[in-house]
Amino acid sequence: MYLEIQNISKTIKGNKVLDDISASMECGKIYGFRGQNGSGKTMLMRCICGLVIPDNGAIIVDGDELGKRISFPESLGALIENPGFIEHYSALDNMRAIASIKGIALENEMREILQEVGLDPDEKKSVKKYSLGMRQKLGIAIALMENPELIILDEPFNALDEKSVEKVKKIIKQRAEAGALIIVSCHDREILDQIADSIYYMEEGKIIRNEKK
Amino acid sequence: MNLKIIWYDIRAVWNENKIKYAVLAVFIMLACVCCNHSCKEALSVDMGFWDYIIWNFRGMKAIRKNQYIVPNAYWVFIWLYLAVIVGVYPVKDLHMAGQQILLKSGNRKAWWFGKVIWNILSVLGFYLVLYLSVTAVSIVTGGFKAAQPEVTAFLLENEQIENEGTTLYIYALVLPVIISIAISVTQMMIAVVFQSMMGYIWVCFILAAGIFVYSPYSLGNYLMLMRTPVFMHGSVLNVLWAVMLSILFTAASVAIGSIVIEKKNIYS
Image (cartoon, rainbow over all chains, first blue to last red):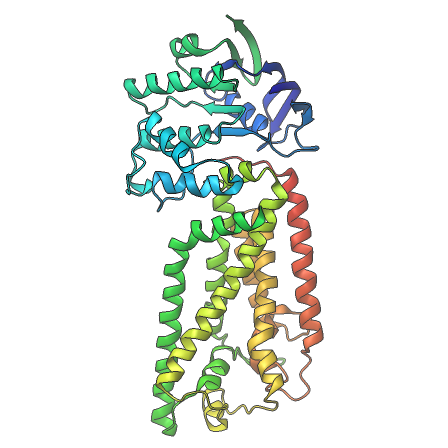
């Protein structure tokens, strides 16, 4: 998995939310993104997912440009902002519904991921009764199922307790070691320092600094 | 892939839509029972299946110049209700759980065509509920006899059926479904291109245009039996125009939607 972001820009209602962003990323690494609210982190992640189409530039995933031959990266797991679910379904049923599209995730794999993030796969409670933290965990689990090669996690540690944060950090590192390219945004400098191989700092839609380990 | 997306759509919205369909069924049945009660009091006869169908789809007479008319609120309600059944979900889903489905499908067009199929199935479901509700009341009241002229005259302000048989079947059972599909798919396209409210405005426009404009080019007219050859000798409405307009609106909406979805920015 190789991701190249080439000079992408995006303007929304006269506001330049992404300004000439370029970066190259490779598999087996964790790339952190840090910046103030409104700095463009989420918008950049949406562009990488293919949900938002940049006005200029290109995003190349394994040689394919998004918006040309492919609409979205082929092997992608994403958690962007507040995840949405089928509210009257349980956690496992939600995963099953989404997994049914590609049909590659096995039942025991889904159960394992739910347990890894700290959710009970046998819980029958519908998602609409979940706390913010539980919803976040489910969003992470959905992003990780099917062992995607590209994993995008936008503020995954929001609403998580300390124990859950450690669990998620461990999972992210394991996935990177297994060869996934992981992009994580986080306000907490300490967490990014612990997991990221490279941290990009964003401000007003630009990458102002890149710190590599 | 499309089948899986469609199956996901059906499951995702079933919890909400089953309640809407149940409310529709109860409403239609209650309306039919009340109507039958009035009919029985006045004429001492029970209404049958075709009497109920005619009553539900009657609409209103064509408006003539300088004529005062009160729009049929029941007729407006039924079609607005259909708009609510199909109007909320596609755009709402795109900004919620459907985003994951979109990403997993890998294909924006596949998502769109899946929604088109879901839309059509929802319209068919609407009609199925309507027909089953009428059937249920018919079983208990007048059965499945042919439309009764005295009942028709009583319920439809002395109007009489001019053409029964195949004409009635086509205008009462087939054309409303085709027209409704065209209106609903266009509503969904407008909602995706602009926003959900614009989709509802489109439906309101179609209904209003149908009420005040008596024309073979006005879709809403084909949802009103009283304006069709079933009731009107020399009606300007005809099957060919209905089918052509439906195909035109549906095909154009599907095409426009498939183009727009490729470039649409999806924010939460």
